[in-house]
Length: 590
Image (cartoon, rainbow, N blue to C red; front, top):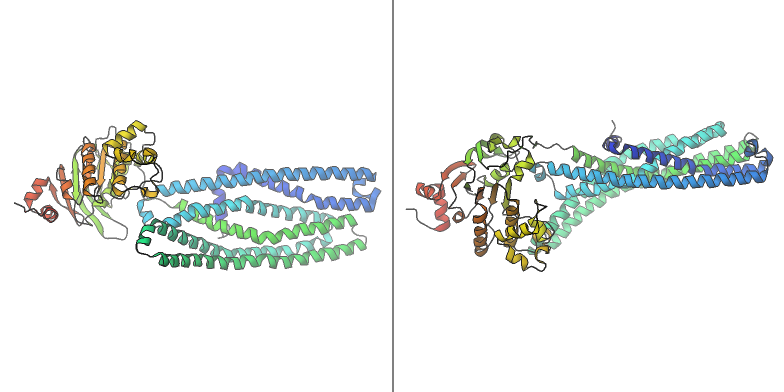
């Protein structure tokens, strides 16, 4: 399979569900071109009537009277133009809707597949690059299906139909019109090879540019605070310049195609005009047939001048299609389980000799064993890099353990259905993500069918109701992208309300109060005391004062469990935990 045809074959395979509509679109494109090629024959027939009169081609079909022949010709003209218009409308309708349908399906399939990929994949990819594939690359395919596919089909139809007419009317000179075709085909393939790698590079450059734009827009506050606008403008200018330069090289080759082909085409047209005219003078070809040949030569060869644009469109589309289908073919390493989680979920968690290391990194967790009974509150503490956040990622199966196993209600979580596992866990993170939309929509995120009364009740438990109703539009206030219109404490309380509404049997609080003031922290702590009742809770905290009432405190160091027990017991041991407590509180251990 060649590099030029492989993407097209993959696209045809992907478009199998749309095969019937594709076949109809191809048929209507062919029929439209057949009727579109008829007018030169009508011109030839009209010349034949005027010159030959009672001896014309139509006369031999039984229409001897010249006036009758003209009316028959008028009727044929009306018929041909009408059906050409009908089939043009039909193919345009089908191709354009097919383009919309396939690009919509491809974008949805790629996005759904991207969502199924493990978190590790996103750490190696840029958001801008993925956006370029999901948006710009898919749109390139749409543009090709909109116009390019029909152009290629009609070009092939033109060659076959007119070539057949030539060899029927004047086989002795037909080869002259066809002579430029091998040169044109060879030139097309040659230019196609030149453009393939260049358009692949163009797609890479636009992905890099999109990545930098997305990165800068997301970090606009940092850019402004460091007065780095000029620096970032230069960086965008470099990326945009690289994209422009990559396009310039591709344009240089694609633009040269049509002028070169036009010079080859004119040789075929001249040959048909001169040598076909000689046949007329010698009496071997009548004037009407000569007229048809001259017009048909132009109809055969002239569309080939647009072949360069079609190939250009094709190459852009295939470069983009390759990137989209490659992404669709990316396999996930986190395989969904097939075991249903028994209801109701108890929430008993256990880690048995768990090892974990990120790809190409040193081990993060080593031989870690923990047990958290249902309904208990467990706190996990340790210095930065101890493995606390990694542990949360393993519980949610963002990553799989590299050794040992994680159990929920006695089930290895790798065997459980992912939706049920994550549905049983509510996460309140220090890095709160709110979607652009209303406060109400963000609280109900994940519980999309929640009633307004339940949303308000959850907000009250999270101590968010009072500030929400003070907003300009209350629960219908737009929070802005990532919740930028709200303070950090407000975003955190909405996040807690979201978890309350979900009502999971297991609640994970990952540094939920680390970035708020003391007053907000006190309010959040009151909320948390209410929502942890009756459910298994895991609390990750740097502020040890917030977890002193936990049923069990696990102390991690360098990915290993060093201590565990209640606050008082760990203080009495005068170990790692006691040292951390002294640093934070200044209290002397008795």
